[in-house]
Length: 189
Ligand SMILES: Cc1cc2nc3c(=O)[nH]c(=O)nc-3n(C[C@H](O)[C@H](O)[C@H](O)COP(=O)(O)O)c2cc1C
Image (tube, rainbow, N blue to C red; front, side, top):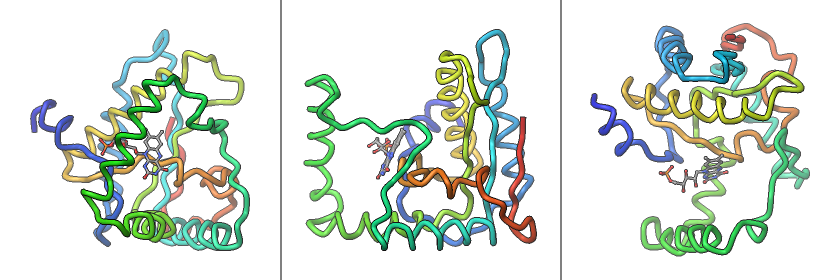
């Protein structure tokens, strides 16, 4: 697949199939992503992968938290749309206005139901930086993340980047003592 195809064909997917993703494929995608440039080659990103029973536990715990109305607590502070510059707010408004045409008037219910199931993702990669990381490392992390999306596309996998997947930082894999049975849950440097 050409880079141009991977870039133009990637889109945020909100309904994944049940297809499992092999550990080999995950490692291949991460090893390609690791070729991203970084400040003085610091390679600051860490990746935690959740699949199988580990991911099912996260799915259940987050769904319970959402259903009981627990307040979201993210690692990176969230900002309200009104704090963005006017023209960026216009981009967001245009995007929202286009959704009913694409998905139908029930789109909010559809989206909430999909999100509650973590989009039925069979793999979640949590990307982190070390504590007290340099501010520039956020730039490096974005480059690393985009490499993951494009490498995944090339491997025939769609992807979703979502606040929703990390809205409760306590359920992100690093902070949980999950059993390492069937589910993958490892750290790559
Ligand atoms: C950091 C980040 C967080 C996002 N969070 C959400 C989210 O919580 N829910 C959602 O439906 N889309 C989320 N998105 C997806 C964006 O809405 C999407 O990337 C944008 O509309 C462009 O569409 P595309 O990715 O299909 O090209 C997020 C994207 C990024 C980069």
